Image 1 (spheres, rainbow, N blue to C red):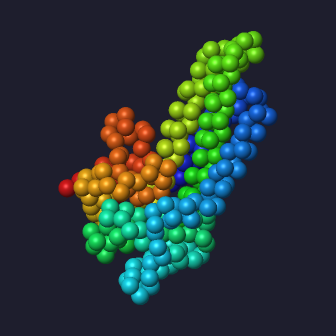
Image 2: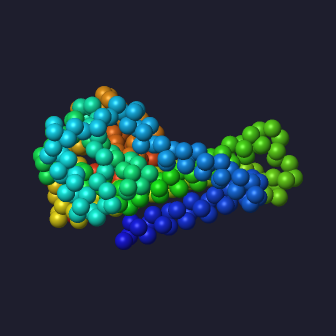
Image 3: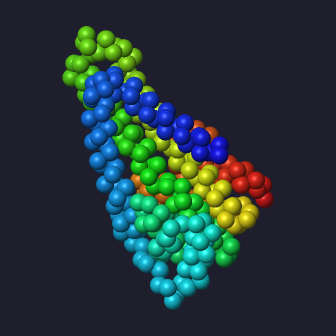
Amino acid sequence: MFNILRSGMLIIAMTLLLILVGGAVGGRDGAMVFFFISMVFNLFSYLYSDKLVITMYRAKKADRERYSELHSILEELSLRAELPKTPELYIVPMDVPNAFATGRSPKKAVVAVTEGLLNSMRKDEIAAVIAHELGHIKNWDMLIQTIVASMASAIMWLSFIARWGAILGGGGRGNRNNGGLLGILFVAIIAPLAATLVQLSVSRSREYMADDFSAKLMGSGEPLANALLTLHGQSRFHRNEEAITPATAHMFIFPSGIGRGMGKLFSTHPSLEDRLKNLKVSLP
């Protein structure tokens, strides 16, 4: 419940930030125009992201005969999750153990797992990872991420206009009425940074919810915790191989490069320590 409330509060914060930036640059009408433009771009991404990411990572539909046990796991967990339809299952030809979910809705969803994940995990750990991805599908995370990305894109567009307006001599009386130099600084630099941090915070919040969903379906957080420990250990061996692109990092259960300290602010996922703590499992 806390993470649901947190996601809601972060989306409200993003909305307020968009209103402030839009008002500073072009008033309410300006904000609405660029919000509409960003919505168009992100709607396209929402509708076709599943096809794009599957193509990007050369994923293939899992043969039902060869991967019969994996199909059975997915079907059983989908029934437990009360999804309207079992997601399509894809295999990613990648040695790095990982998985992701995509699709526009629970009725048109995809779960993809890498060959590395199948080769490095026990059956219960694989099931826990799939349950995590079903949590994203159940919670409509693809739609929520699209909404947040739309607002973040609008803020980026508006800040871009503000920067060029200031460079080309837009720092006259009109800008003084909107807060002068401090207003331009806020719109051009601080607002995009704040939007990025909020967007990443929403992503991290949804990861906690998917982790909780996995623990609920599996009856315990231990299988997912063991899977996360395996993913963390394997990521060190594959640090410079088959890298996950920054544009799709939020889709995977465990992207590489999660930092510590200040670096955690710019991560799409919580740290391993925080995820294990959320699952109420101690580090070994």
